[in-house]
Length: 113
Length: 115
Image 1: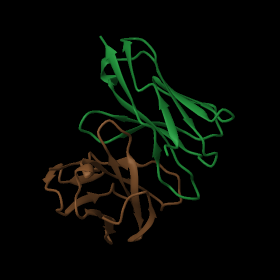
Image 2 (image 1 turned 90 degrees about the vertical axis):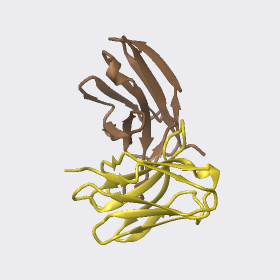
Image 3 (image 1 turned 135 degrees about the horizontal axis):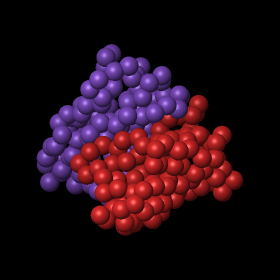
C-alpha cells in the first residue's frame, strides 16, 4: 500500500519552462514532507522540505506548495534548466512516532534545451 | 565531511548466497536507515538502527537483517538471495535519534544484482 501517490510519472519541459509535480497522501499524522532529487546511479539528495504549518516554501527556483485540507503538496521548478533533468521523489514521515520516509514512485523530468 | 559512504558500490551475487552491505553515516549522525530501491521505483524502508538496536522495520522478511556498531556505522545482511532482491540499496543517516523529524542524508547506494 503506497502511502504517498505521485504524478505524473514523467514530464518533458522546455528550457526556461515550469515543471510541476504533484503528490497526495492519506495519513494525516504525516508532518514532514521532503522532496528528493536523484540522478542516475546516485543516491537521492534532499532538495527542499516543508512542514504543515506553512502553505508554501521557496528556495531558489524550487517551491513547495502545501494544501493540508486536501492532503496534497506539489513541487514547482521555475526556469527549468537542462541540469534539472533528474528523477524527483516526494516523501512524507511522522515525527515523534517514528521516522521512516514513505516515498512516492518518482517523476522523471527531462528539460529540453 | 565525507557525507554518507556505502560500500561496495556494485555487487553481483548468485541466488541463495548471502551478502553484506556497509554504511558509514555522516559525521555527527547517530541514526541509520536502510532502503531498497527497485528499478524505476521509489525507495522502500527496510529498517532503522539507533543505539545499536533495530528501532523500526518495514515489510521485509527476516532474510534481511542488520547491525549498528558503536561508531554508528551499520551493516545490512541479506540471506538466501532471490532474483527479486536485485536493487539499489540505500543507506540514510540522520541526527538526534529516530523520533526527531530531521533531514536524512543518503549515500550513493550499493547496486546489488542477483543472478
